[in-house]
Amino acid sequence: MYNVRMMRRAAACFLFLAAGVAAGQTYDLVLRGGRVMDPESGLDAVRDVGISGGVIRAVSPGRLEGKTVADVSGLVVAPGFIDLHRHGQDPLTYRLQALDGVTSGLELEIGTDDVAGWYAAREGKTLVNFGTSVGHPPIRRAVTGDTGRREATPEEIAEIGRRLDEGLRLGAPTAGFGLAYTPAASRLEIMEMYRIVARHGAVGHVHMRSAAGGGSPVEALQEMIAVAAVTGASVQVVHINSTALKYTREMLEMIEGARARGLDITTEAYPYTAGSTSIQAALFDTWIDKPESEYRKLMWTATGERLTRETFLKYRKTGGRVIVFTNTEDMVDAAIEHPLTMIASDGVGYQDGTGHPRSAGCYARILGHYVRGKKSLTLMEALRKMTLAPARRLEHRVPGMRDKGRIRPGADADITIFDAATVIDRSTYEKPAEPSAGIRHVLVNGTFVVRDARIVDGAAPGRPIRAPILTR
Ligand SMILES: [Zn+2]
Image 1 (spheres, protein in one colour):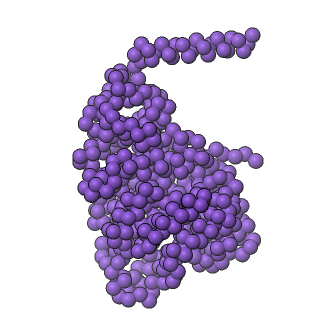
Image 2 (cartoon, protein in one colour):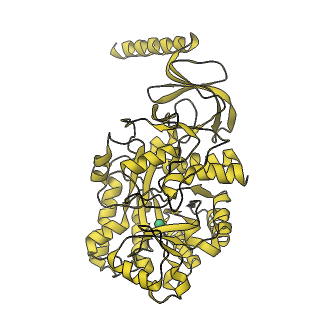
Image 3 (tube, helix red, strand yellow):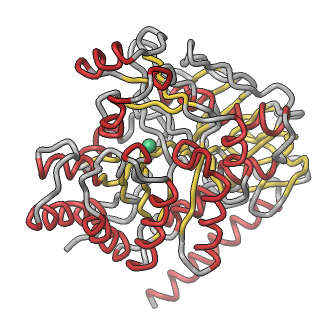
């Protein structure tokens, strides 16, 4: 009896909903007459988009009605951009990334050793969706008390592994590795960690070993291919642009070859010829005996000055960030334009307005420079690299990602609306916090965070991107 009543109620409810649609439903918000582009279905046409309860409910060639209607004719309506590599996780960088079209920003490279605390600190307070990996570097530092330059004992490796496992149980979407920052982590230690990653069906995002130690980035990639083959884990090679350098094409070919043999290895890049990191990082340990000209490749972010051997040694004692100009346009283009490569900013936080332009301009730069300027990417292909591909990378372990990176009924209303004719980055090495231009409106879970190219003050619709939490 109880079940029959339940079924009747459900049937009545369904009929009511169906009638509502047929009679011309009024949505919370309608985006009217934009050029809707969805990389999953290939849809590229003028449509109305109806949104209610933070979710896309209808994508229609006919006119939809809404309590609020935004005329977006002449603009592209795309899934919100998903950045898998974003260290800056503070209010200023959230604002700049929203103005660059990013609706989900995740710190998946270095990550945290306190997954629960990291999420709790942001819940209900952020402009955009957020997430973090559980990080091998911070865990290793906490366990060994060392900066990555000392080999860990078997007991320490066991404890690092235990904490990595714990972080994955707490719902970190992925595990993060920074082998260039922990050069003393042995190949066996890393193999052991990826066994844990594999058990959770997670991806291990890795900044591979540094070529600075005399090795080659090709060998660093060979290590990760072996790790994937031996452990069965998924691997995301972060910023192939700044890691592969002159071997960019060859290393992309290696990844293609590994994938053709069934290994799950993917990669990402950011569209700049310079990187940015701490001058005290272990990857600069081998820089003390470089020819004088090499130091000119380093820019001290606090002042904009190029370094000499003398100032390099001086600042290495005090600590701070440097911009590292070690790449060429040709290598970066090869990385960005390759079909395997996702776009990810590696955006860092700002210190007194100094930082790296990628934190504010990465995505608009792809749209303005590569799609409109060079025409080396189609708009749809660029959007795929910025939305669908990163969503798919996480959705095996984070089911909620199946409803991101798409414009279709049932998808989260994370939407970026921009003018394809004018969108462009404006941040530079000298002025790295200039917001991008041409990003007109941005919705996160159905709420405007950018409206008419301005941040909506007080909006905090961002939600955690997190895998299911496992109880013991
Ligand atoms: Zn990195």
